[in-house]
Amino acid sequence: MQEIKDFKKSETIDSTTEIWMAIMSMDPYLLNQLLDDEIDYEDIGKQKFIKKLNDRFQNHRTLGDSELLLDLDHCKSCNCDQPICKFIGNVSGKHFGLYFDIQKGKIMDIYHCNWYGNIDFSNPF
Image (cartoon, rainbow, N blue to C red; front, side, top):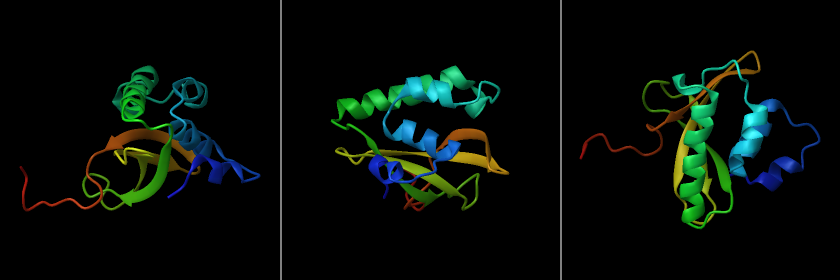
């Protein structure tokens, strides 16, 4: 699991890492600067996507989280075992997953993934 301070030690930080750090610090204003205006994130657009993330950030703050930790997991559904970024509250332990569609080193889309981790398909309710 990675903390923000782990990334700050690096001498070179690429644009994907900058976005990870903005999410980890729960900073919607920085996300607005970093995310590409031309990408239709999660098919809802940049501004609605940032608002959706900010709603999650507010929920995490309510739970006592001051930052999110980053861990990797794998999608168990539509992205068929592709890696996803799992952002975990530093106090609450509550988490959410984001899939980063990266092609040739450039982010093409980011969207929520709800099918990761240890999912028990034998008991759907």
